[in-house]
Length: 236
Image 1 (spheres, rainbow, N blue to C red):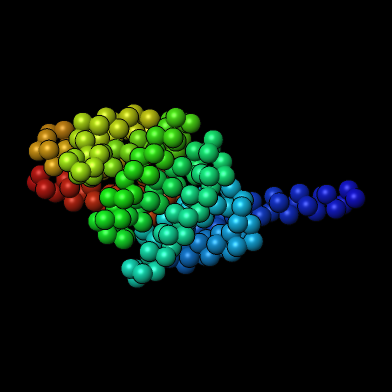
Image 2 (cartoon, rainbow, N blue to C red):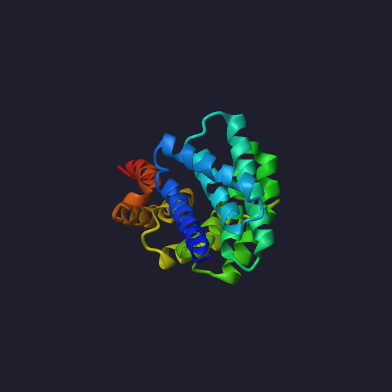
């Protein structure tokens, strides 16, 4: 019996390690696809496992946003991620992971499916962010604020929740909680440029570009650096 329990715990430890190892390989097309397919297979075997669900939402979003070029395939991948996150948040509403990846997946899902779907996604995104902030405002180093700020920033003000002052407050909160959040700096810089606040935009761009590179997330880091560099070129 002891040997049986030992094998069981060894299997659980090995699977957990391999699961995160696949996520660690996500920065190449092959690695991201492998991580996505592996997590999707685990979901088919354990459709009610909270950890599998939110990790499927996480890799679905990453894979679709960075590597899936075909529009219809991207919609399918993001729909799977959205569905997984919805189920995760329903299974454990007291945990922030499901709410965070629901908000993130809904945002990309809406963009992939057009303006009407984007508008319909606003309310559930805001609800997910607000619930997540209530549970743990520092989850993912404050990224709930960044996501909510982006909705305040991009949603129309007349027919939706668009509010520039609230967007600025959320971006600044996200950066305060994580000064190395390059994406939050980029979002904030874009808003400042739109508001013609050039001096503040330059400051935020320079701060964003001077953040040390997180090599574990090199793909996203490289993309954000390119965008910030292009924004800076507008002032030269």
